[in-house]
Length: 91
Image (cartoon, rainbow, N blue to C red; front, side, top):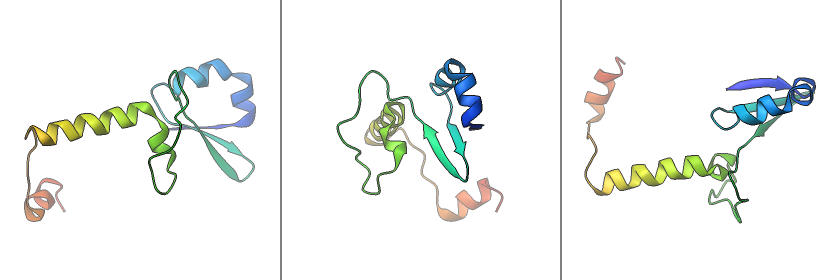
């Protein structure tokens, strides 16, 4: 994630638009924050998130979710108990 000021954005627009392809770009304007999102070649007609979360407007995020869903359906997952998960996370 990269946080930039509106001044930085205006001075280096091309740079930040290119970076938005691969990472999260946050623009700080006064005390507010905005997110620069690469929507690909089209504008989504709707946001599938009930809360309106901008994460779901990014086609790359939707593709990753769909890929994970397919892996689950094919059984290409590892299942852990809560105890085992805590052990793996060293909690």
